[in-house]
Length: 292
Length: 159
Image (cartoon, rainbow over all chains, first blue to last red):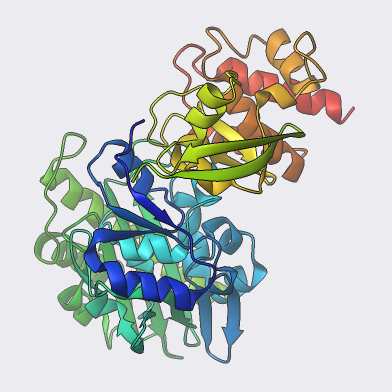
């Protein structure tokens, strides 16, 4: 058998799961969709002594629209999000990013909470969450707390979740009026981890002056890479071809830290980040106009 | 640690009961414990798609699940596609005619990925077929004949 031995616990309720989590702490890994955890266990990169299977917790699987927020239960499968009209109508950035996540067979099992808590800097949903200023609810036997996406991702596969906590909900604020969006990435093959990717949001006032923007990269550092200086160039301005080039240059030269690999050197990743920023900004801009 | 868990599940309409170690992968359970060797095992980390089975109507990787997680669920493997080992279903027939396989190692996973896809999308475009196949690796055909086989099946089904 490929994975090492572990003790398997399948709680029937969240309360029971939290009890177990507080008892075992760091020895435990949570088995949500398992689409990243099980490969790592098959390679024995991970050898948790206890596996807490939370697939029975149906109360953590939901998609709710609540005034100006979309609330996703942590155990909601990625395929459920993909097939839900509430998501496509209210969170088009998320909708656009979902098909880039691995393959349909993986999305049938993978969950939104698992994807985000795994905190792979090359993954799509952490970047979408940061771009949208998402918040995550984590619970322990002592109660619950909300963590802002910006503070959540601490580094490669590192998050702010404590040993006794479980993520239960993802809260995505809806877009302001006149907001355009774009998610783009470049992978060598469909479903592979991307060499570069970016999520862009752009909010314009009635004179088409940009009053809010986000540009967040995946696989460009140890966590989703947010760009403050580049976004600063956009605020208060009308988008022009020159400005877009300037923003893409600044973002790709100064605000990311790609490490490169066998499929793309760090310089090539910067080049891709530059091109994707330009494309995504143009796409987001045209979507503001189209939706009026 | 090596505690056994009792599971009961349905595979291709037959009921099975077994005591399994928690770390036993669903793919190994299907092949080794039950002897249903139609499900193939390639990479064992979710990339190649050879072990794809249908679980409660959805295509999933059998190597990315533990057998213990399939307790109470309904699974279909390639053995469940046709009425008997001598017979082919319409999709398999189209694969045979269009040369949609050479060595055949990837074929069970490809068929099990395509069944739910074609159910949800009975008239797919070539582009959609290629996207649906993107999670299954084939090192023989170059994919063209597989795409041809699906197109042949779709054409027959809709005529």
